[in-house]
Length: 310
Ligand SMILES: Nc1nc2c(ncn2[C@@H]2O[C@H](COP(=O)(O)OP(=O)(O)OP(=O)(O)O)[C@@H](O)[C@H]2O)c(=O)[nH]1
Ligand SMILES: [Mg+2]
Image (cartoon, rainbow, N blue to C red; front, side, top):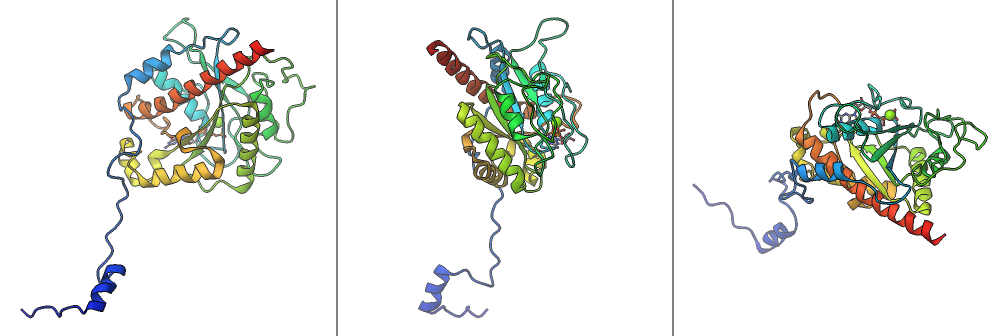
């Protein structure tokens, strides 16, 4: 067989800097070699940590987590998932929508308590507040001003959000003297890894809400849902979540769009069609929940110091 013709010096130099048009490029791997964030799968310790948590500040019996985000992002489903994980069996206290599109399915302000065991053994001290989703335009979805009132504890249980305008202090749904317990201790933005781009109008509302929380010193986090549908790697197994380049890029995109740092962002899969508890789903939910509890507890501590200074 004839030898292939020798390359000239110029050709060899060129091949160092430019790829050979006849050789197809090697496809980039969709995964990292190692997970870029490590989490313990089958995490019994975190479950116990969450179950044992109790605020130690006088006058505060509950650590209150408020969820906000675009319509259909999975806010109500996240509450259901947390309750299912903590209780160790499927629970659906927050009515979730059957679809992810259209108008907000949740319209009223509701606190979700998590029952301890069966019967009358009380509830865990971590509670979740579900609200209406953010929608396009000024007259649809929850009003950012209502979220500010909610953070300060001014919105009474059962209040029906009115997209036409924020709650006024003359409304019977307005709580004039909220206790430290009524106030929100952690604000969580919920977005979906599998939805269309968040519109500018919704992003502006999210920025406004973030600014209001920052002014009050409330810690903020982000949950990215639907990672089971985000890319083929996480579709295969949730354990690829921190191996998937796509999921990391999604997290970075949301981080810069909404202004929440990467270490406060947690990808999860909510329980949606399962009928049984799943260890991998639980692990991701617990990883986010543990951080929520730590952030909220730090804020409760600070609130106590401020009260003592008064
Ligand atoms: N596959 C999958 N489906 C999810 C996930 N999270 C939520 N869903 C589904 O998405 C749909 C919308 O979820 P909801 O929890 O109602 O969303 P929401 O943010 O409360 O929506 P609004 O109350 O309308 O603002 C439901 O059909 C859920 O089953 C997830 O992580 N994975
Ligand atoms: Mg909802």
